[in-house]
Length: 329
Ligand code: PBG
Image (cartoon, rainbow, N blue to C red; front, top):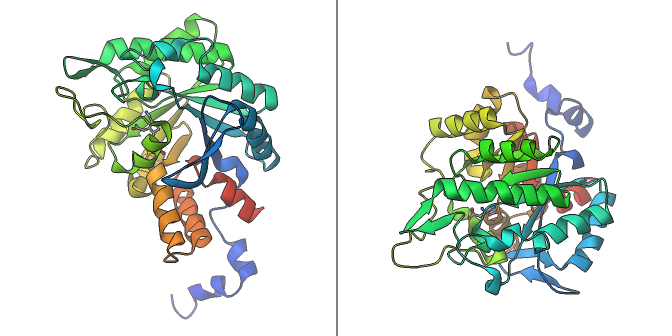
């Protein structure tokens, strides 16, 4: 009770503030998303993601080594698939010599101890831009789940440590776990995008991979028949618990900032590590505001990352990972 307790005593100077600080950001917190393209000597900036790039494999090697030097030890891989290799069934996703499979090997060659996680979903491979196979105007669940299981196997064979299904089909975690177990990949983990919302914050990412859903008769242009309604809370817990029952080693909530209430609830509920994806739109918003001089980039970046960890994230997938680590260490 005041005046026996004056809370401001613990805020009087930097030393005491750092002594009582509850949330500390370290390079160990981060998972770094990487975008890869075909070609040589390519490092192209993504227009809606300033200072974030697509790399060809030769330049990716250099980037990965730099991440490792900074203490960033985990990457999440995404590939931009050439249009002529896209179809409705994701055939190219299973190509043992496909861009993703070559990327996994390249990263492991450059940096053998780097933890490699791979995105598993059909959207970069699909002429429609959907995460699943389209039939009669619908995204069909079980056939898609079978392709995702094969895709996961192919990534494991190429050397991925974790597969990260980002598609939100029902039952795909069990299907993937069984495929991995059945082929001896008992150590290959699954980080499931468990509570992935149908969010308008994914726009810049879809620019990065040229994977936005297309406008076609019969096919819904949004992903609301598989990604979650952003009005829902209980559903996030249900999805996450089901994924854990099906064999997910890590669960993820996505996007980040608008969903920190969900992060805390899930963190309190589950006994596996919880990851949060601070998505492309969140990155773009801060970059744009900072460019205009309206927000202090570094201060807001740190505040947001700290808020995500404080909410309960054990792992943060973020396009700011490198910037944060450079600023703090
Ligand atoms: C693909 C996928 C998406 C993201 C990660 N994996 C886009 C989508 O679902 O449309 C979004 C990441 C971001 O916006 O940074 N399944």
